[in-house]
Length: 361
Image (cartoon, rainbow, N blue to C red; front, side):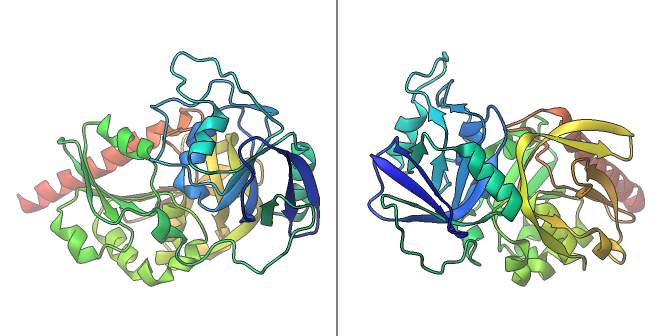
């Protein structure tokens, strides 16, 4: 059955429904992902909440869907667009085909679409609202791509507890990925996840050694009400901000963010580490970046830059034990080059604890 992708700029792309045709129009922001692999992690990454994802690699689903690589318990994308999706995945861990998995969760999959033309349009005119429809002529209604409550849809409603080691990491959940938690468990940490609006006082009662501000969807400026709380955390604990958490840390310290035309989404983005003078590949998923000119009075200085467009990829504070990165150091999906960020954060916590012991003595 024929299906259609309608963009806000009036462009329409035809294809075939590979899952059951949706009974109603599917609305979302149209974005594209450039990785050849990693589709399972992308589909289940809460940062993609309410987005229609276009996979640029022409054949998706080759190794199927397994039971190990989920970033959350369900997919968060509004819809998926591909050139071709295989019905016959080949991998010893595969449990479902891409189509079967998306059909299970009622996520529409539109195939046999000219994905190259869609990507060229997005690169030229930027990300924009889009509709997936059964009809060639679609009824447009004004809808916001990201509403203020987007993070509330993906943040946990209660605390979560993982591991029994030390140090104790409190992860503030704006839509966090499972692999971030696992990155700390591999380093023998105890991890407590808390809802995004948890107060400083309640986090203080947990007696953390360090704070992680997680990834998540949407515009960071939609969360201005919690910035005073984040600022308190930054001033009292060693803190690592990842993706949205990186942006929120900057806003809390008086900086600013801005939206990119079509964002960074893929597993092959080159990043320069100015501290060590080296370049590595990174996994990324974001529409917003830190405004470099706004950093002057924040106490933050640039450590990482994106070599495609020179945008800010990570910061370090001049006085406080704060480190932030725009990319995904846990590498799900993507290269593992940036995982040393977690080790540096562990060293930052240890240094803070050692200073506390000396001061107490």
